[in-house]
Image 1 (cartoon, rainbow, N blue to C red):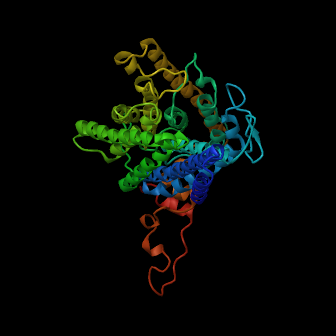
Image 2: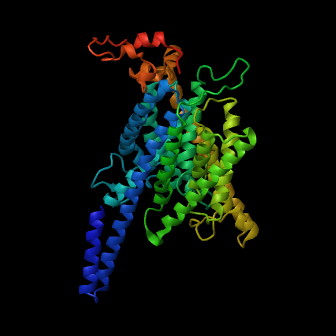
Image 3: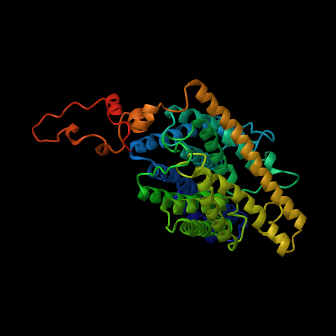
Length: 486
């Protein structure tokens, strides 16, 4: 694609020098070049969003115990693959800006020559379809943070298919595809890159799973008090957060869908400011509560800041971004502590993506700038109080944002709960107690992510030169012999 842009630039320059009087031809060449630059940026952003899957993988593995780390690899690869096919076959059609206020009706089994909205599919449509697919994959990845170390592997694939084909596309169509939330009393729900569409959707799906799945064995004492079950690697958590942070540049700045006026740089700066403020806020709050800076909370502060700015990223001025990120960093700490009393969420997804996603969507209604809002929308309440905007209109926009949150929560919770309930009633949702104690690596995948931590050295082939290696112990024996190791 870069090469094509370079050739396009050369041709445009040649045309400009050789035929200076042909304004129409020059304009056509410039427009063609601009189109290629825009799609190049979307494709670069898509790669960054895809890279976020590696961030989720490392984050969740780091928060897992050693006996469950390998399962996370298979989970991410299979979920991404199932969702890819579900989105291509069905999901994109439901999410598309066709059909009615509830769902789209064109674009199923996406292919060249297809007519969508009266326009034949081309390269631009393909890039945007792929970009939307990877957003759906991020939303799905959020779901599984609450289910670590105890869910059946088959449940991943089943829910991924339903999520990619129906649940996420309905939400996306409602906000981005001209659906119900695109016009609420004449005002649109403003969610630039998905605080509610992506992050709240994933978090609510996670809540539905958790309500039916229950906590890990040993998480709560007999008196109901939560007990810490530490993850095995904070360096992996930190690397996962850093990768997600980088990926968010594609997530937010890529949602400009082009390079016009270099607006993606403004969105990127808002993203960076909010993430940094989230880290500082979460670190300060945990220090005030515990007199130490919790590593995991600092990471969740970054995620919360990023989630919080995702909806406002293209609608607010720079001064508002640190405020949004800071509040998100405070929310995530108190949210994790409060949720942990009743629900076993190993990575803090309900707080970092759910509560911060709600805050980010509402923050648009507080801080959206008059120069950046969508057609038909009103600026944030801040501009109604301290600026020239109508206070009534700004409060009305805040109400529309709140309605968007409520509608997303209700739709996703109901559909996700029914899906997970059907899984539990049929194939079962949770592994057996013995399988959970042994760890999902060996019980679900027949291997260990860290074999040296579980297999005695004398059982390794070639442990002594010249001595025949013993036959490997079957998985059933390993489960029985070492059920309680971390």
